[in-house]
Image (cartoon, rainbow, N blue to C red; front, side):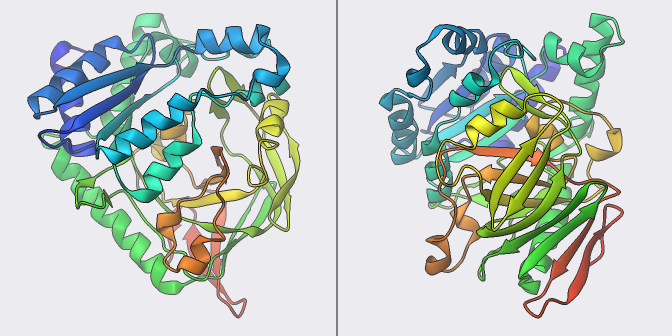
Length: 399
């Protein structure tokens, strides 16, 4: 990634993704190893008129030290100022930018997965509150790193692996277009229209059927499907994920039944869960199995009452740019936009219209997405009368 490409990417993230406004505080969440893009983002933000750029860097090696040596009872402790900072950013109507992509994949794999699952940082529940209150304009974008490149392309020489990763990111972020913003707006129009059609149907539930999967996810009566484009309470349009290929809504956390098998690995900070299979009864995950990393997810699901229940269901068609690459990126931002997915934990209350239904939404302190879709997984909407309506067939919209 040349300096020119880095600057162009930063301008897309700041100007289009987060849509930073003159006079705003801009908070950047990053990690060691991502300094080049972080600094380009800071420069782009100041060029956009930012009042102040506040950089917060999370080091997964420090997380490893905590998991390895800290007292067991302290692993779920989070200093109060972590959450207070997020809430303050909301009160100040700040912009927020996060950089995804692993910098030390597998760093925690040799540690007790139960202890790993107790420490949820860098996620803090106040982030979900600020998102639902729509007080910040925000976005998340991928940042290429050498270790990430070698994880995705293990058979290549390090330099070639990095070039391939950046080539993939350039493509899925539409930076290979003469006008990336115009290309994104064209795709967003498609996603927003799909969300409109889904909302119009007012399905009672959505069913996923495929190899190892037969899962029915109940929806709330006023669940509304959203996609790509968000607006703050003060009217600032922004695009939370670059790239984004999904439409999503808030399910009924008490009405999820069946078995689901993940179609891609789930990457958590420092650990990777492979071969995940989850069984739900009456909304609750009652069985969590995996080839590797199951104990880490089980520990996360013990965090609170809602941690073992769903907070999101999202649909992804095959016309996006990520799925056709047929690549596991080991990064939730990319992998969740390659395939339909569900999330354990915190719900998006903004995807529910009625206040009575909002009170039923999952308010867990965690939010963990995992991918369950693909060409072999068929998605069907169920009406209140139980009638099936094809939604996704072979990855194509059937509505």
